[in-house]
Length: 206
Ligand code: PRP
Ligand code: URA
Image 1: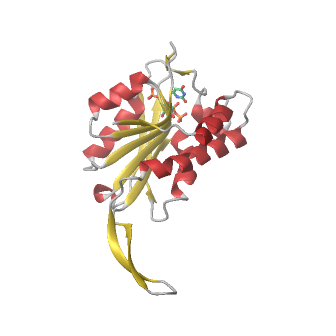
Image 2: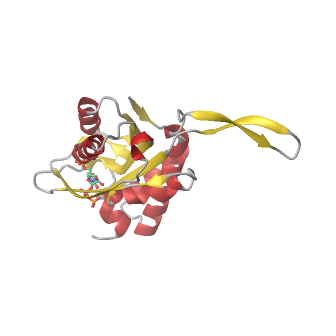
Image 3: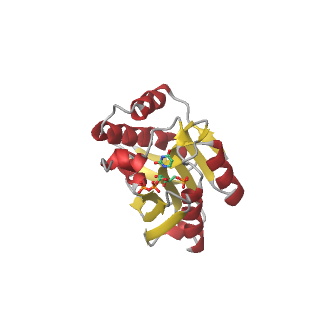
């Protein structure tokens, strides 16, 4: 299922990120802040279990999250969303998947994968700002499933219908969350209007 989060704060911050005049520091800050704003929605259906807490007044039965949570940024650009999300989920563990997209073929190439040991039983959020052809996200999810990890949600900032369709076709069990659904891909595989190369804008590499 696709959820596009529509919220004035998200749209405002994304407009700052889309602006080509925005520098790396502000780009990173707004990316992290949008990641944080998205947490409220992506965590809505986390399971809980009852606990008893002694307040200063009396004992009460309340609830706490009952599943492990793992955040998996797709390197590099996914790293730009980690702090904003992890700061709001105190128990979160963090895995990493390294993929880069060949600029000619647009095919993803894996170069790194390190997951926390509890991942099979956890709710796993794969994060990457850009869902373009969907090749990188689809490959990351396939890689996780091969390791027996099946409770996966995909959290991206900007996507296009092509990328959404690819994930829906290849991984229909994976919920997709976007801050914006843009129009299309251009001939170089960039999202239009998009925000350019997310990795380069986060790390200042171009
Ligand atoms: C970008 C982006 C996604 C991917 C999206 O990464 O961060 O991972 O492209 O494109 P796709 O949906 O067509 O696969 P890139 O490969 O440029 O690597 P980087 O994060 O190291 O810059
Ligand atoms: N990767 C990016 O960083 N930006 C795009 O527009 C598409 C893929």
